[in-house]
Image (cartoon, rainbow, N blue to C red):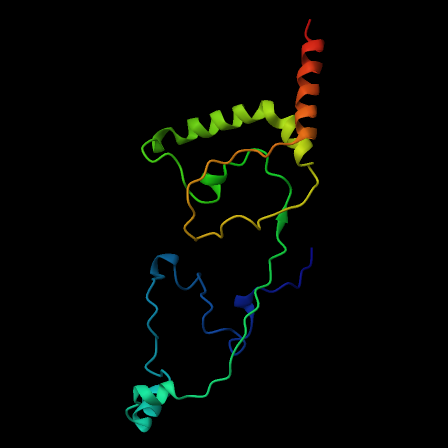
Length: 174
C-alpha cells in the first residue's frame, strides 16, 4: 500500500476545484438541488445585445438565405448479439403487454419461458449459439410499432433437430 497517496481535499487551496464539497466541513444534509449561481457574477447576455443591434428580421429575409445544401447519409449500426432464445419481442423491445392483465404479467412471462424450453433444440438449430444477430429489421426504439404476433420461421434443420431430441428422449425413457 502506498503511504504517500493524497486525497483531493488534501491539495493546496489554490489547486482545489471551487465545486469540490468537503463533507467534513459541510454535512450531506445541507446539500440542495438549487442550481442558481452562488455569486452575482454571471456572464452578460451577448445574444440579447446582438439581437437588439440587428433590429427586426423579416420573414422574407430568412427565406432568401442562400444556405448550402446538406446531405445526411445514414450508416447502419454494427451492434449485434447472440440469439435470444427466450425473448418476448413485443414486451421486451416495444413494451406491449396484455393491457388488462398487467398484474399477472410475471406469470405470463414464466409460462412463455417454460413453453419455450421444449422448442430450444429447434431454435438452436435454426440460430446457432455463436451466430451474430443484428437489430436491423426491427422497429427502432421509441418509434410506434404495431402489435404483431411473432412466429418462429420454418426451418428444416430445426425440425430435424427437434425430432431427433424427441426421439432420443423417448428412447432414453423406457
